Image (cartoon, rainbow, N blue to C red; front, side, top):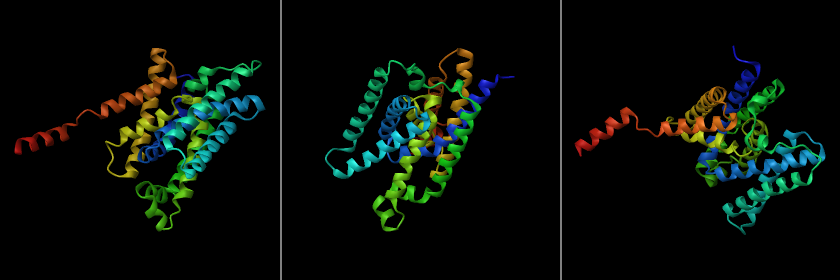
Length: 273
């Protein structure tokens, strides 16, 4: 029988993976991986403000990540700099500002490693409830906005012409990203959140023929990575957050291996030609 802390970690990780699956698919489709990194890095600024102003940690991180995403949208409309340049500035500036603010707060005991890499084994039942409730909210909103989000991903101008309001869907999507980052920070940490969003979705791309199927498979692959990573962490005494990401990476690498049916088909085509 596993200890309670391990069961809580499994429940938290599986709940988070179910949420990051469909969200990560849109990150892949929209080529927003760097945007996810920027929002994740801004989380440390949220942590610093939480400590400085004695605010709730999760609410503070969500507000900062959401604010950074809205600032990015406003700056993009000015067309003075490319999106990559803006993302680079915001990503490094918020991370550095958060570190500097924490350094000035010498009276605060601050475990930087736990925020950067997470500590899923320390989650409480209250954390698990927040993760599942927040995850249900995120997945529910994605389901409601699935058509406009997907249409805007394919062709934003066409989605606008059809009255699907892609700009509104984009803003809501960014707010959902901010919420997931606030939820996930304690589990996998600031530096590994984007990996959990991207790697399962990139792996699922090879096994699904429809967008809906890819979202489902991405969630399942994320859950499998959580289970493998946590058991590996338990048996090998390795950090839990990085172990989950390594497990996701191994699944991705396995997905790159040629499948038997595909290989034989390619061989037959080669012989015929």
